[in-house]
Each structure stands twice: as structure tokens, then as C-alpha cells.
Amino acid sequence: MPSKISSPAACSGLKARVIACLTAAACLLVLAGNPATASELPMGAMAEAPEVSEVLVRKEERRLYLISGEEVVRSYRIGLGDNPSGHKLYEGDKRTPEGEYVLDWRNPDSDFYKSIHISYPNKQDREQASAWGLDPGGSIMIHGLPNEAGDMAFAYLGLDWTDGCIAVSNEEMDEIWQLVADGTPIRIVP
Image (cartoon, rainbow, N blue to C red; front, side, top):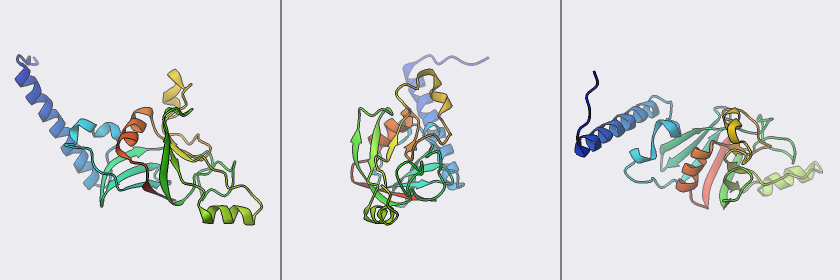
């Protein structure tokens, strides 16, 4: 029979032990090469919010990593464009770009919950598209789910459904929004 927690002190002690266990489990996952997802490592488990120095996206893994120095501090499962393989070449190709960019501004009133803009296209992207007579496109963002998703939000998670953006759940977007400052570099690799 489960025992009852009879005092607030006992409750806070139990909460501290649970947070410590979750933190230890998440650290073991990171050390084992399987970084924890947002839901596996509660924000409350961190003593203080880390200073994110870089965002790394590994397209083949469908993962977005928040990095502080040389340490991965957060990891998220992502959705990409409908045609995710290869570098974005032109507007409408539904590819997510590859390369080094900057997260340069944010939109709290996005059609996709919240969004943070990626500085695509850079000079090289514009020159490449121009050489082919194409428009490189733009408005590539890290964002949450469509505002009208409602009860169907679950259907987007883990799928490639964007026009070239990087999508996460709304809960994860709240964390990224909080932890990543404008001006943070983002590196997107195959």
C-alpha cells in the first residue's frame, strides 16, 4: 500500500528527489549519445537557464540542439520541409536550408504559435539561386504548430510538414523562445 505524504516538508523533499532522478536520467542519456528531449528534462531541473551559444540542427536525425559552450543543454525532435533532403535552392522547393545562419528576430504573433527567424538567404544562397534564374525564398523560421491545429496538434509531431521551416511542439517552442536570444548562431547540417 502506498504511503501518504503527510507534511509539506516531506512533499518538497520528494519533489527534490524526483527532480534529481530525472536530471540524472537525462544526463545519462546525453552521455550515452541520446540527448534528452524537452519533455525528458524539465526546465525546473536546471539550476538556472543556460546561456545558449549556438543552435545546431541535424536534419537526418530530425533533431535541434541548444548548445552552451561545448555542452548540449537541450534537444528536440523536429519536423522539416516536405522535401527535406539537400540544401534549399529556391522558393517553393520545400527544403530546409543547410549552412550557417543567425537567429535574427522573432514573431510572437506568428501563424505557427511563435516563430524565430533564420537569416536565410545569405549572400551565397542569393547568388546560387540568381545563377539559375530563381528566387531563393525566405521566411525560414523555427516555429511551433499551426494556430488552427487545435485537437489535431498531435498529428504534426514527428512529421515533415513545413514549407522549409523547422517545427517543434508549442511547449518546446516556449522553451526555445525563452532560452535562445536574438543574434544566436544556428548551424543546419544534413
